[in-house]
Structures are given as structure tokens and as C-alpha cells.
Image (tube, rainbow, N blue to C red; front, side, top):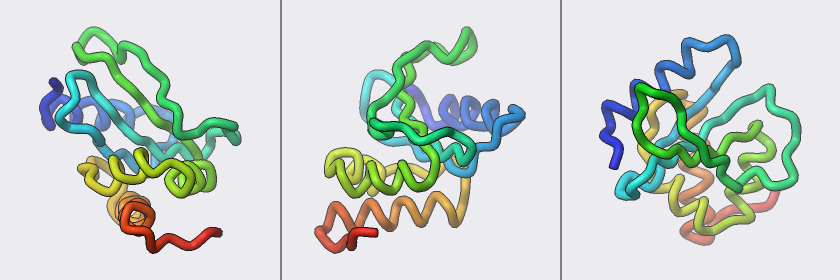
Length: 119
């Protein structure tokens, strides 16, 4: 099971890359492998934005990574469409993105609690 420090190191490594990342939320903190949701504004539209990509992130991060990565519109749509993803994000740990990430967590809590509006 990854620690918060390991997840922060992974996220900070991604923040240092050229590709823009607006938010990162660690979900499923109790899972054996790592689960991360990233808001990547430059990603093209994805037909299945809520499906994780599973891979090994590298030699310094010794956990399988399940990455849910999408642009803002796709990620919001995935949260609204997938109650399980919404619940994970609602209970997630924001590691990067401040207000942008908190907006996603708020939407996820609204979906989880049955108060989200379409749009």
C-alpha cells in the first residue's frame, strides 16, 4: 500500500513535467495498489474517461498505478455517470490543484449524496 509521501512524490514528479496537470486526487487510499485521479486539461476527449489506465510508474514508485486521467469536461461527466468513482473522489485526498481539485471533490460529494445536477 503506498504512503501519502510516496503519492506526493509521484504527483510532484508529474507537476515538474512539461504536460500541464491542474489537479491530482489520491483515491482508494486503503487499496494495495495506487489509485490517482488527474485533471489533465490538454487531453483529448475520451469515450471512457473513468476507466483507469494501469501501469508501473517507474523504478522509484514501487506500486502498480491505476490512473484516471481526463480533461475537465470528461472528468466531470465521468463523476456524474459513475457513482463508485464519485464516491472515491468524494473521499479522496487532494494532493495538487487547490480550488480546482476541491471543485471536483464537491461535485463528487453532490453525486454521492444525490444532489448533483446535470450539466
